[in-house]
Image (cartoon, rainbow, N blue to C red):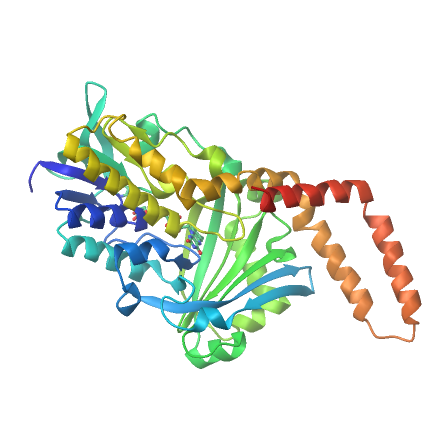
Length: 436
Ligand SMILES: Cc1cc2nc3c(=O)[nH]c(=O)nc-3n(C[C@H](O)[C@H](O)[C@H](O)COP(=O)(O)OP(=O)(O)OC[C@H]3O[C@@H](n4cnc5c(N)ncnc54)[C@H](O)[C@@H]3O)c2cc1C
């Protein structure tokens, strides 16, 4: 192995491989260190892979990428202990031709190796089973990485940290501070096998159509978080993701919450008879725009989850931002190489690209969502419970005249809702999700 590269990348997730592919296509020498046995072996997500950037990286990716189903249906459910009210959106326009609505269910143990192989085919050197422990420095500038293997001190003009949410290298570099608990979520997920036909019947799908389902309220003990089901071809991705604070406050562990979710009467019939093939846990950086650290220093760039690029609003979008930041970092380095300037100043085009794209624009738009969620816990427990209780009253069949039922509902709402507080909270919701 050469001991000097143009670029060294830590991590072969979507952000690292997107950067490696772009750099290698431009003829730069690139080495990628991945601690897993193979790229993707340690990675998990929900998950819906959002693909507008992937299409730029690999045109016609759908012809060869290991994708599961294209998402045509989104379902958002509110749950109390025994009831569910849901909003479901299905659109035939999302079912026409590839790349459909640029959203596909996928399994990371298959997708990540495929994207890394694309980078390798373009000329990047991918080194699995190798942890990078430290950065190499000279005169205050990063000049390479120290990998945990013989001869592991590798020099590079630039290092890209694509090492995910736990990036301790970003902390060592001084770019990122320690996260507080309330900006991290923890997820537990199972992959549950069911026959293809059963999945299609239970979720109302045909062929390779897919559904993304998110569930709030009692299914996740009323915590700031959600349960999810994403349909794959012959498996379901079933999990829960909640703020770490919520787990601490409720004294509950992720696995117990996942069991609670799976056992809700509305959920257990969807997964009935399935065989659990895998179980995994992972963290999600959900702090949004306020938590985005400095992303450039001399000879160093941060991409993907290491830079906190996750849009945790209704979209739960991380992969697209990861690949976009990897692409922008690579394009910036390609420009910097022409001037042979890898200083913070020479790399500042990266920040400009992020600011002009959906990456920072979207994070900025939803910058209040995390605070809103933590300060308005009633939206995750009291309000869903009340709404479902009222719906139950409304639809319960009896000899009581409908006018009396409705008067009782109004009384119940009056006694349980404080109008002013509710208005203020609804206004906060509007501002957090719908204002620019
Ligand atoms: C439960 C859950 C559900 C999610 N759902 C969705 C979803 O539905 N849609 C969506 O778009 N996003 C989703 N996300 C977010 C998405 O998974 C991430 O935003 C995305 O994977 C970030 O990519 P990345 O390349 O930056 O980091 P990662 O995918 O975390 O990759 C980092 C890589 O670096 C390697 N690594 C780490 N440290 C080192 C080291 N020191 N040396 C060498 N290698 C190292 C790791 O092994 C890993 O391969 C979800 C995340 C979770 C946890």
